[in-house]
Length: 66
Figure 1 (cartoon, rainbow, N blue to C red):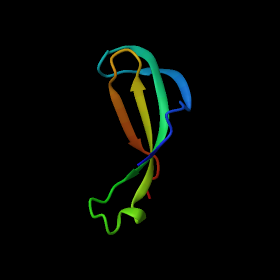
Figure 2: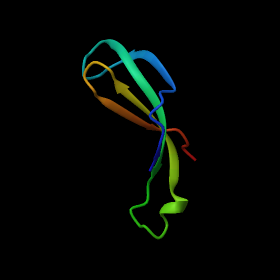
Figure 3: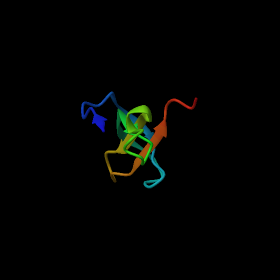
């Protein structure tokens, strides 16, 4: 899995866990979707990952819905 720990942006978003807008760290990660190692190189997709800086709750959203 390719990951950059440098945040794309520190921003305020609604946190479902906290129930209020809280600061979040937003990153983009390339995740492998296929459980089959033979085809894993063809199933990597970008995901937006938002992590609440208060409670640590994480929300992952696929960016390419082709």
